[in-house]
Image (tube, rainbow, N blue to C red; front, top):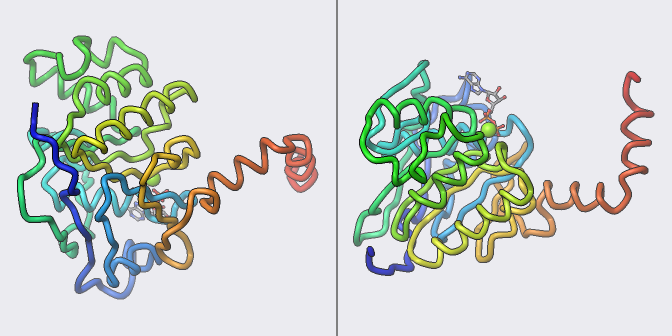
Length: 247
Ligand SMILES: Nc1ncnc2c1ncn2[C@@H]1O[C@H](COP(=O)(O)OP(=O)(O)O)[C@@H](O)[C@H]1O
Ligand SMILES: [Mg+2]
């Protein structure tokens, strides 16, 4: 068992020498990195609408940390398409002096299938994945296997929308894993739209958007507000949505 540590590995990230024009330099969230982003918490969460740059940032961070940008660990070197992100070479990651992570993994919902294939190709025991190839599990089951069996105290985990494959129940299970490991010295950087995952105790939460990246409280976070409003009165929402749409 790795020794318990409570101080996060990554303290901050900032971008230097960003070009002015083109993708992804014009994304407000990417520009905001020029002023630096505090990551000094066991759980850092990025929420924000689709297309605001969450994946761009998490992917670049993974690349800068030497983790396969299509998802996987430092040993995974496969790529099914050109995913190298130009932002990575402009990132300066401020790490805390001390032990390195005992494990690091980047989990992307959209490429998890490829990660499962790579795990099979590399062979070896599947213990870290629950003993069963993820190809023989549902997408959500595979995700939870990985979180439950591979993620460890003292690890560094980057997750991009891990909720996409999960039921509400599955999200609660993942939340429990994250909260538990974060209390035992793991660090998580998570891009998410899930009001459940965002509830992780002690998380440092940011919202990406037109104004860049801003710290946000749980109750103020977009996914939480909108979901809460919807659940308060689904009929009212539907009325507005359908009246304002083409149908
Ligand atoms: N390789 C790329 N080339 C050009 N634009 C891209 C590329 N990848 C993503 N984008 C654009 O960058 C913006 C941010 O994307 P992304 O980081 O995936 O957003 P999020 O994860 O917050 O939904 C989007 O408008 C997206 O279309
Ligand atoms: Mg994304």
